[in-house]
Image (cartoon, rainbow, N blue to C red; front, side, top):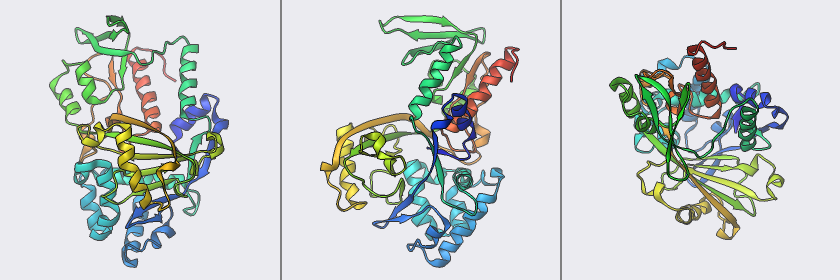
Length: 389
C-alpha cells in the first residue's frame, strides 16, 4: 500500500497514465496483545487500550503527538529507540507496545535501533490521515503494483531502452578506476562482457562488494558494516475472512510472525475470485532456521497460531498458499546512522549505488526507492554533462 505522503510514487503512477486506477481507502489497523486484537488506528483506540493504565495511555498519546509534530529527526539520531521510549513513554508502555514490535522487526538487534526509525514511522503516518486525526487512508493501484512496473518497463522500451529480466551479473568491469561495463552470465553458461556509459547498482551492499571487490577501504567499510535482516512471507488464499482488520501488528513473542496483512479487508475480494488473501510476515536473520524453511514447513508452523486471532480458524479454510523470501530486505538502522551512509557516487567513476541502506531517515519502501532513483538518475546526467529537467 501507499501513504498519502508518498508523492514520488504517486506522481510516477500518474505519469504512467495509471492515476485513474489509484484508489485511496480507509483501513482498519489492529494490535494483537494478550490474546486480544485491539483496535489501534486512532487516538481514541489508544485511550481504550486497557493493557496500559489510563495515565500510561495519556503519556503514550502525548509523546506520540509531539513526535508527529517534530520535523527535525536529527535530535533522535544519537539515542536508541529503547532508551528514548522508556524515558518518555515509560517502561510499561515500552514492554507492552514497543519492545515486541522492535523485536519482531529487528530481532536480536532490537535494542540497537535508533529512535530516528520510530520517529519516521510516527511522523509520516499522520500524513496519511485527514483533518482532525481522521481515519488513515491508504493507496493501492487497483491493477496491482505489478501493472505499474510492467507499464514502466514498456515506457523504457518505447523510448529505446532495453529491459533484461533475470539476467545474472558476475562483476562490474573496471579499467583505470572507471566503470566500463558488466560481465553478464548467459543462459548457456558463458560469460559475456557488455559495455555501458554508466552503471547504477541497486543490490544490497554485501552483494555490491562482491561485484566490485576492489573498492577503496573507507567506502568498502561503510558497505560491510551495515547489518541486514531478511524477509519471509507466506500468502494464504482463504475461503473466508480471518479477521476484520487490514493490518495487525503482533506484540507477542510466542507467535512466529510479526504482522498480518489481510489484503481483502481493504481491497474488494471480488477482484480475487471472491477469495480472501492474507499475508503473514517475519524478518529473520538469513542464517536463521526460519529463513531456511520450506513453504510447507512455514505453513505448518504458522497456521496453528491463527486460532489465537480467530478461534474458529481451521486449516480447511486454506485454498492455496504461496511462499516468498527476500535476502537483505531490512537494514539495521543504528544510532548516528547518517554518518555511515555510503555516497551514491562511488569512488569509481561512472559507478553509482542506490539501495535501501541509503534511504534515511525514512524507512525503506517503494516511494523512497522512486525518489532515490530520480536523484541518482539526475547525478548520472549531471556527471555526463547532459541537461537535467
